[in-house]
Amino acid sequence: MIHPKSYFKESYDINGYEYIIEGPVSPKILKTYSFDSDLTAFRRPKDQFEALVEISELEEGRIIVAQIDGHIVGYVTFHFPDEFERWSEGNHPFILELGAVEVAKKHRGARLASKMLMLSVKDVQMENYITLTTEYYWHWDLKNTNLSVYEYKDIMVRLMAKAGFEVYQTNDPEITSHPANTLMARIGKNIDNEKMMIFDHIRFKNRFFF
Image 1 (spheres, one colour):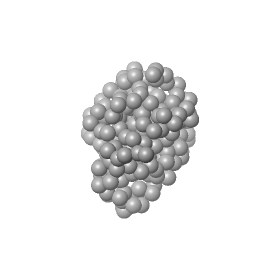
Image 2 (cartoon, rainbow, N blue to C red; image 1 turned 135 degrees about the vertical axis):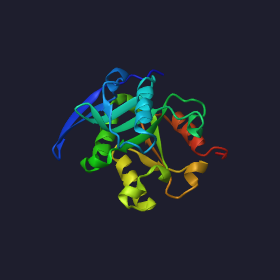
Image 3 (cartoon, one colour; image 1 turned 90 degrees about the vertical axis):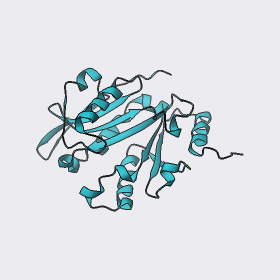
């Protein structure tokens, strides 16, 4: 399976900032951008930026960014599931993972996350994937939002739904370890029953289907 990428770009003038939402961004262009120091949800900004560049260099990797004059204030990542997670079982090329969504605190009122997600699924290639996302409460910015885990979960579910993601059940131990944790997936229009059955078996590993 090949992984072609079609580039899209949108601009928005919000609260005095001119935001550019674009992607998938090539490694060459990405390396010319700066990275906001407030993007710390997953690792130190320098390390996270390096991770974005590495993902952009992957055949299947996709990086969508929100930037102001070449300064990244938000991003979304897509790549194959981590080899240590059950979602990589079988190394199926039609299973893609939305790995991270992050927006710098100063810019969270501009709805950049939803704009990046909706742009990311404009590419018709996305209809050839089952794109999953695992929402774990320990990655959420509960401190700065003053929300409960369930309020935050509701926000994440509604956010992902804007890009066509739906909640799916699973017996994955990390998801079931807390009721706020959630598996969501977007099923591309070109996914057939055979591929859905593979996804179902991965979701309910070690469970018999009749």
